[in-house]
Amino acid sequence: MTVLTQNPARPLLAGDRSRIATNMTFVLVVLLVVASLFSLAIGAAGTSLWQGLSDLVMGRDLSLRDRVVLFDIRLPRTVMGILVGAALAVSGAVMQGLFRNPLADPGIVGVSAGAAFGAIVAIVLGGYLPAAIAASLGYYVVPAAAFVGSWVSTIILYRVSTRKGRTSVATMLLAGIALGSLTGAFSGVLIYIADDAQLRTLTFWGMGSVAGATWSKVLAALPLIAIALGVAPFLARGLNGLALGEAAASHMGISVQRTKNTAILTVAGATGAAVAVSGGIGFVGIVVPHLLRLMTGPDHRFLLINSALLGAALLLVADVISRTVIAPAELPIGIVTATIGGPFFLWVLLRQRGILDM
Image (cartoon, rainbow, N blue to C red; front, side):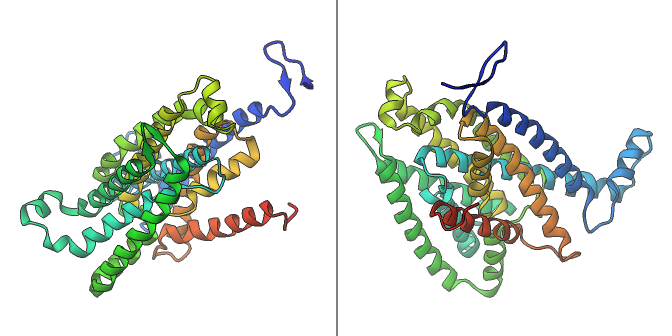
């Protein structure tokens, strides 16, 4: 095996891009910090982040308006963007590793479709809920229904694709496509009977946004997303082994079935929580891990962590664009991510077919 450079601690072998991936982690941390500052600084209210920080450092009291804008509107929106972006990107990276397909994302197994169907049911039929339940859930009827929908779809997929304690990834893929079509049909029926106000709500929810972020919504999504992001790095060895095939992974001492189960639950929890609080935001789960795989290699030890960082930064940048491009109005963030992700996805397809030499 060819040795490129000799390091006293560890030789750098041909094809080893771990140093590049480590340097990328540092770059992405800086990028995330910068994106977070821009997210806190930019908004229609005109409140200055820098003036607010200066007042805090100098011991001066912030005005009530500045305090509300910075700490009750922009900060929870920024935190929500970080959580949702990281959750979607890591879910995409896990799904691509599990299916051994760089174009896989959480939507491929119907998790996102299940969450969307739950939200549509809540929006269209929420008025028929008992008064006590509607009053207790309040604004969180739609997020709660979306989360339940994602988990129900995950349970169905797991039951269909698991036999004698072994989960078939191919069966899960096909079942996910079928479940997505089925929930799409049911969603179409509900959309058909929805009134004008409900159609408007469905339209904006489907495009995705973090504009309505509050600390309550952040705290509702935080536990599941935090658990998923904490568990994901422990999947790295298993996903690296699965890249060689299930038989090879088993010979390496990897518990293939446990890796599959953990990966499925991780994606369901992260995606369900993200979709529940932000609506449908597409392409983050495809673009981020695939771009990092091209730049730093397929090693999931670095790919999962870097996906979380880049996904969070990308969503914050998209959110800043969404609130400035037609200010003082705001574009749904899903439009921005689709504008970025659509051409990238097409480029990936053309590149894989050899039509573009880039």
